[in-house]
Image (cartoon, rainbow, N blue to C red; front, side, top):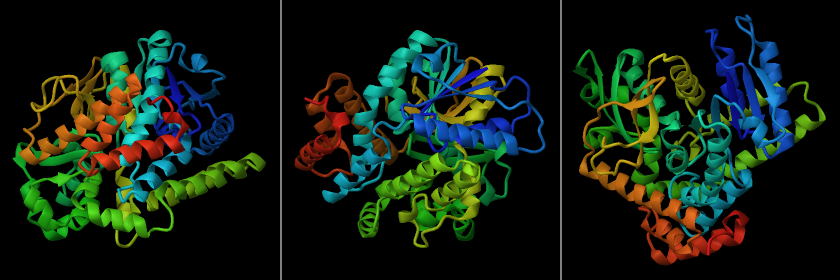
Amino acid sequence: MKLAILGGGGFRVPLVYSALLGDPRPGGVTEFVLYDTNIVRRSVIATVLGQQAASRAPVTAKAPEVLQAPSLEAALRDADFVFCAIRVGGVRARTVDERVAMELGLLGQETVGAGGIAYGLRTIPAVIALARRIAELAPRAWVINFTNPAGLVTEAMQQVLGDRVIGICDSPSGLCRRAASALGVDPELATFDYAGLNHLGWLRAVSVDGVELLPRLLADDAALESFEEGRLFGADWLRSLGAIPNEYLHYYYFHREAVQAASRAATTRGEFLQTRQDEFYASLQEDSSGALRQWQRVRAERDATYMAETRSAGERDEREMAAGGYEQVALQLMRALAHDERANLIVNVRNSGLLSHLDDEAVIEVPCTITSSGPQPLPVSRLSDHQAGLVCAVKAVERSVIEAARTGSRTAAVRAFAEHPLVDSVSVARQLVAAYQRRLPELGYLR
């Protein structure tokens, strides 16, 4: 089975390979094909993967063969799965996304608000082009999208490839596991009512054997304080909502505090990652003997500082880091699609009437049963007025981003910024487009 990794020089690619190495079941991936426009980064990551395979013990199955594709065509040809994890403009562009927003007094987060819109505007043209190449070279492949903004990119790719594109994110599954753990129940035995968009969803129910347990969790301050989202939002606010939001909703519910915290920081998240990753890739060009060890060190530092601006202590609890894992979501998804091994996962899929406030083509993030036929969304409760209002507003923004990217319309780009709940002015929206165009050559297509 061939898995093509688009963005094969990306720092998190070894996580996916590690998940495959840890899966002894037959019928797994045999070819792990890396494609990246940055050949140096691709080569470094291939070295890390080789050391991962060599270091595993005990050896229970043959490691997937790591191949470096010389072209996009070679990567895609006869692929069974395509993992899309590209970053148009690299981390350099992410730092621009952050700084332009912050200079105008706005949130500088990479997927939420102005930064997320800029990210989408430079990414959508590239992923649409990729989708067309996939349709030509690997029309039966399943596309697993992890390129951010994940829901927006998935919807754009689905306009070319239909339901064979599935978006993944580890935030919802991590939240559900943490909530189950706080309740003292096995997450594998629980049913979760979670719904929304990528980075904009809420856990509204947790049930085991038909017994609803979330009210018990919301009433228990100590249990809520035992995990990330409980500490982020506070017990009183969670009880007021009657739900547990995705961690990224912190940027909406505590917007002023998030902007202030970011403005006090010496560097943005993108600048921090750019420094660490540039050092990592550069050092391994000279001596790659300790590539895996260096990768593990940088990864631990990245994970510990993830969303640090939302935590007063600045460091992430080790239990929270252990609860995530988009690579495990990807592995379960591939096994279910390839071998009909039924799995229940929260993924980004077409709405198809599930959330009544949105049209059928809107990509949403909900629990699905995955089989070889693809994802089948599971029933979820109706969005509250508050939830629906935010979801519809942000979906309108996503649609404007896709329109701007497909047509080159600067007007649509301005509208995308102006419509976002975290951008408070049409005039500021025009300033954002102008500033991003000056500093991001990838947005030169807007007219």
